[in-house]
Image (tube, rainbow, N blue to C red):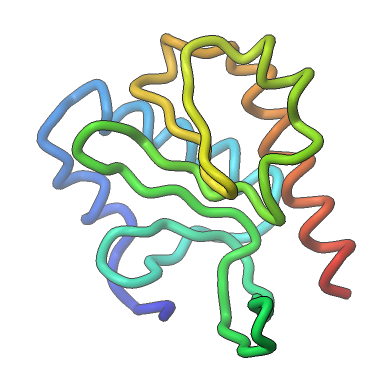
Length: 132
């Protein structure tokens, strides 16, 4: 659920200085791609924009168009509708791992920022197109 909590306060409370700086940089990338202001979703997800996510069973829930969360081990980026179709970009991205809809990076210094921006921008375009 989207909340009224402060994104800036949340990110400012990240203890690791590098992770905190990286997260503020990711905010810039996602804000530009989604053309939306950041908002807190739950207690630890920073999201941009909103659409109705439909699960395979037909249930729906509001979800950000693009989002990320600074976790203990990784910064998790939520790439909708999933990682399929990103293989060529992921090969050029640098150090990362993935799951079905998540891209995990330890720090921005490990990845090619231009490629990351391409992935974020494409995810926003695809999500918006699929949910018109």
